[in-house]
Image 1 (cartoon, rainbow, N blue to C red):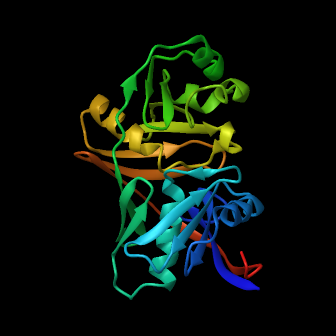
Image 2 (spheres, rainbow, N blue to C red):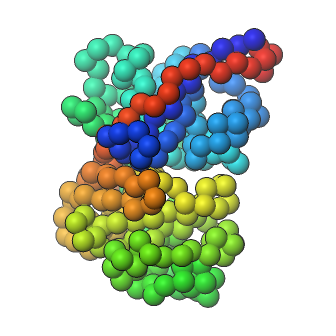
Length: 266
């Protein structure tokens, strides 16, 4: 029987029961894809991160209950919190991960952790009938990045009160759908929907902000932004556009530490 350390962390929150929960599994070598998928399905959280401690830089992969993802912000933030607390030398402030999309850096600043990710480029799209039926609200502009569609709505109230058609979202040729508008108390607000990954609404989505930050930095003519993802759990993000990269920062709250047990042949 093989024992694997597992942690659960609420990302983009100062306290538990808010933000976006992620599981973090610490490995001495990669497990098979099937076993990692089985673990993520058993955890039944929006993301489970797997960190390989014996690669340089540290390897990281992310799985939803349904599939492997190419990029995940909140589970990377959660992984960094665990590593800073439990596995790295005291005083260390940066971690570099090797991921499917290249090198990703996390930076500790006091009680917050920042993700240093590649910026996504919003490309304007025609507003199709499927998009209209998906959103069910007035869409001012529509964009697409590497993974997601981004629909810009009239105001924060429209984002908070929207009722998305998940069946139509699942028909889009994308990972999912982001909706956003300029905020009342924040520079911008958003919500994110990923039914094809068995995540109808993701509580706080770091990777979506690789697309949101370049868009709003251009619209608002500033590179430092405060954002809020107004899901039921909700979460605040500190954002910065730095050329072709973005910094996405927030607090984390540790919720659970333990071990999982699998057949050693796996």
